[in-house]
Amino acid sequence: MEAQNSKKKNKVGILRLFCWQSSAVSVSLSTLVLIYVTIYCTDTLGMPPALVGTLFMVSKLVDGVTDVLAGFIIDRTETRWGRGRPYEIFMVFLWLSTWLLFSCPESFSLAAKSVWIFCMYVFMNAICVTFLNANNVVYLVRAFETKEQQVKLTAYGSFFTMGAAVIFNMMFPMAMSKVATSAAGWSRLIAMLAVPLTLLGIIRMLTIKEQYNNDVKAEGEKLKLADVFTLVKTNEYVVRLSLARFIANTVGSMGVTVYFWTYIVGNVSLMGVTSVTSIILLPLAFVLPLLRRKLGLGRLVIWGFCVSIAGYIMMFFFGGNLPAVVAATFLTTGGTVPFSMLFNIFLIDCADYNEWQGNPRMEGTLGSLTGFANKVGGAFGGFFLGIMLSLSGYDGTLQVQGDGAILMIRLLASVIPAVFYLVIILIMRTYKLDKELPKMKEEIEARRAAENSAEGVH
Image (cartoon, rainbow, N blue to C red; front, side, top):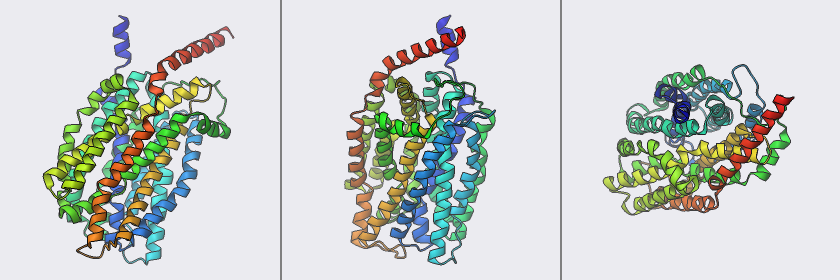
């Protein structure tokens, strides 16, 4: 009977799983759209790649302030809708600003184009994505009671996210080659995505309620700004995770893939072919919880990035061969799945670690810090790409690029990401929280029981 009750308690259900993941699917596709913003700026708007990369990098100065503030604001929020749920409304503004980002008038001067791109990119990332990142774990732990439910939602829910990414990566390059042949075409293409993905993105807010409050701190006690600095000083694990996420998104957001298919493979419309192989990765969503129990989060992520490195090495040596590119992409993508799919579980563990130390859990601030690292990595990826392409002599107005530019594109698509991922492996080697957490959880539960008992006596 006890086992049956536990199983029922940990059940999620396919409908609730879909409703929960609808927001993540929408946000992830907005991130994939941003991969194309550099080539949109350089080849459609005629902007210098170094300027484009610099604009994105400078935008992170604003993002740094809003990220810290967003987590702090969410952790202090108390409404009848809950703490994290109200901020799902930023989904509407996310897609509006994404469409505006790709709708810059072609007739504008270079200075006006720079201001437009900078402002839209800042609003999209520094405001919309910031709050949607910061509220995610806060919402999760208050909508679903057990750790088993949270793991299932994070892992199984990734099936929908990956499936949507596969479809996007198959269809978007073909649509881009046919529709996005001008500035007006880019605007029309993004609008075709923005409307349905906005509707999809708000399903979670409308259907999933916050029902639980697992704060240890006494009710009514407000989080202080000093708690944010205490978090950074006392939680070494979130610092490591932030560094790892910065590096991972530097690689993921460089946007070199579209250049690689344009100038190395020679046909950008075939770029979606590699996404077909990603379908094979979808069952990983159902295997990851088992692998997590056997290997632990840290080791699972390390093994994954080793697979990615092997794929990038293969990409360098066989980059012009279509079957080899497909196989290499399968390895590079598959290796990142454990880190991306289970990242929210890392954050929940970090919140447990905060609680074990007697500090506020601060899920919102944890999401903000790692979200900030993620977005800085994304901006740095674009900045790094722009600088390296400029140094190599790349010119977006030319039909044929020089040997230096071609070599640089090959390196950016293979050797350089492999080196970055090796650094992540070195960082994650010292992650041991998953081994120490069971004992910490026992102490946390005992503390909660004692506090509840004291409240009952009072």
